[in-house]
Amino acid sequence: MRIDKFLKVSRIIKRRTLANEACDSGRVYVNGNSVKASYDVKTGDILELRFGEKISKFEVLKVAEHTTKDGAAELYRVLN
Image (spheres, rainbow, N blue to C red):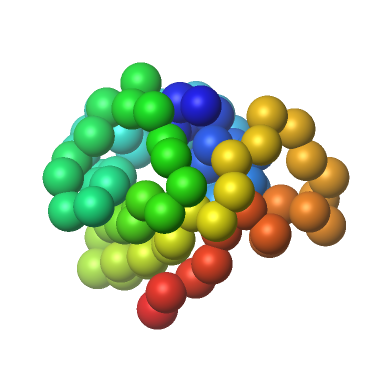
């Protein structure tokens, strides 16, 4: 699954267009490397999102095309 879609499905970022813009501006890193919106997310990847001074890290636990609002938190684990 593309990283922009994963960020939206997991509800880390509210809208896919915002996730796409974050990737294009170089604020999304996977395993320490800046990625484009088309990056294919895999279980075990470490996502790092940078918004201003704030850095958020997540570990991908599961990749699912669709999920409920309650099930979205089961797709990732917050690392910091």
